[in-house]
Image 1 (tube, one colour):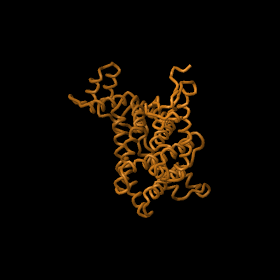
Image 2 (tube, rainbow, N blue to C red):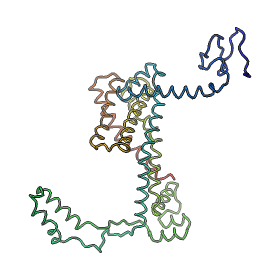
Image 3 (cartoon, rainbow, N blue to C red):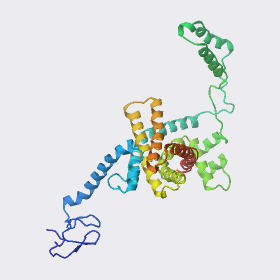
Image 4 (cartoon, helix red, strand yellow):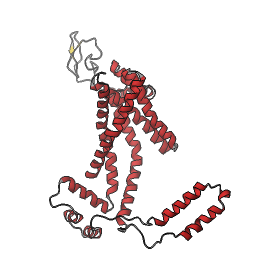
Length: 365
């Protein structure tokens, strides 16, 4: 038997959830939506979770088609007041971005592994100052001619053009003068640093040997910590991992900046939040496109590069049509504005964010 008292009088009662006054005839509270007589049962326990899940699921699939094929439609409808019919812009952006970063995480792990392997090779290699391995002499003109002679004699049979012969000759000459073992020199005595590391010396002692100042700042100390990890052959992978880990955070700064640029170009087209709604849906579209593209390329079929670039370019066309629909200006003026917005975003905002990402990934653990 329920511990909660049943409503027996005709007098209005209080909602169990929000404590608002509710008429007895009401099955649901008009203020919060909870049932007025909500006894705790197994079905009640899981009702909210299941209903919220299927509500999200239904709204997402209902929003997916207009998001992909009707540029600017969802943002337009959201501003018109249809805010429960389709998935909320921020909710859609968060959900799709999680899917996107989950998909690229497979490639991220491979990049981290490759970076660690490369770092290990560099750390263990013998560095030379002049970059030339004297043990392997350069090709002389006689050797080059011996290699080229069969190509010239059989040029017609092999279907080679004169330009192909010239290219082969150029590559051989380059091979003759290029170093066989490209070396790199550290700005400190690496052998001594390696010996200090092997001896288990204090990090500050090692940093001093590497050239750190007597009174280092926080960033200088972090810089030398990263350099030491690179010397040990352990730092490149963590830098790459930190870089990719910080991308989701950076997107929360890029998106408001993008909305601010829209506000500047459309200063008389509503409050800043209107442009933010448009930005949420547009970035959701971009993440969806590249999620599908990366997933297909990795798990299904390696799409030709020209198709990848064509799909990437289509995101600009989507942006153009979305602006035309949402802001309702002439297509030519919108085309000019969309070009300038893209230019500002790619030349100023993205490089700045990329630099911040690099600094963040390099100076954090």
